[in-house]
Amino acid sequence: MKKILIVLLAMVFAFSLAACGGGGDKDGDSGKDKKAERVTTASGAISVEALDMPDYITEADDDDEDILMAKEGEGYGVGDYVLISGISKDDETSLSYPSYVKGQEYTLDMLLSDFQNKNSYKTYTKTKIGDQEYVLLDEDSNRYYYTVTNNYPVLIQVIGESMQDNEAVTKSLESIQYNY
Image 1 (cartoon, rainbow, N blue to C red):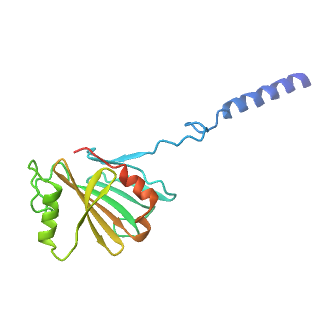
Image 2: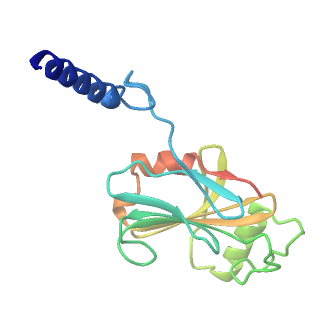
Image 3: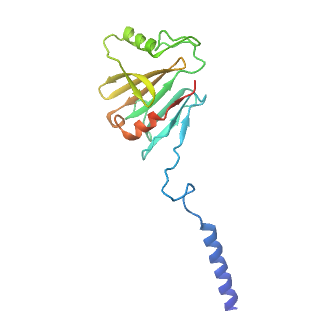
């Protein structure tokens, strides 16, 4: 009887180890970098690598061409955040970009001209993030990066000092793909 009990316990122990075995990381524990999660707007017009910071989220708005990067529970006017906003592929015109008309040529120089005519007291400079050229408006602790891709204007708002010159934020912004 004792032998049967010992054999049964040994089998239970072996099965429990087998069930728990292989519990390593699905990507392997070899120290390789994990592939970063990409977040994409509903239409697929904009995608970006998720922000690699503890307690921060990167999420796309279900209704607009917006992607928010912020501390959990913050964003859209609360705390420091990054907001990537594109124009919907359905929008015919935009109040923010006076010379933008859907289906017609719209360039970064046209965007810059729109802003200089509208806000002549502000200073805009050209800059790059990754390979993409932007028009930058730097105001106190906020930065606004404007670009045009395939005739569609896009705005990146970097709000708050903790998000500026932040390595994780820069890495995410460099990963942006525009699919207009």
